[in-house]
Image 1 (cartoon, rainbow, N blue to C red):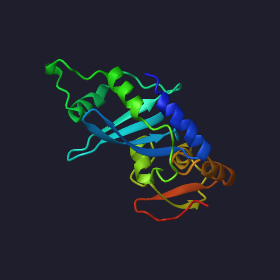
Image 2 (cartoon, rainbow, N blue to C red):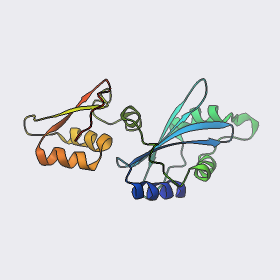
Image 3 (cartoon, rainbow, N blue to C red):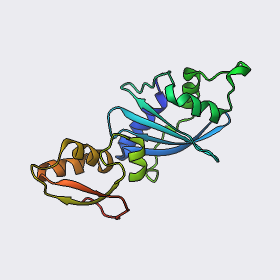
Image 4 (cartoon, one colour):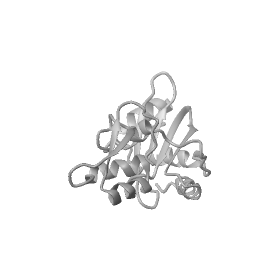
Length: 184
């Protein structure tokens, strides 16, 4: 399914210079806290149901802002969140759900709704040392930063930080606890 709303949102995010956005939507009976990140390839859209028993669903957003209609492991959590009972004749269809989701995604980004580091690593599970999402310091190590360290630096801190790391041959060092330190 082509997600035209994500494309519009991303264009607006570019205009204000951000790579992540947080927003809330309602689809049917369910409310979702959403995270959209373009910091890695493929882009990522994560939905967390709101309520007593939150469920987490992650979707890869492929070039052209395409999300697969096949819900896979997201099927159960989404079915439960949407109060859909397949035996009642109104089963959960990926294309229909994604079309409804596309209709409610905002087209305008907001500067104050940027993801925090702990949210970013949750959305990007392949990030190196995901248990340490907070920037601590730069450190010169051996041959310079590894590709995995550069990837984490870019996803959490952005392109400028990755370029700084490569140019100066320093690795980003990360903490489990918030340090309130900027990379500059």
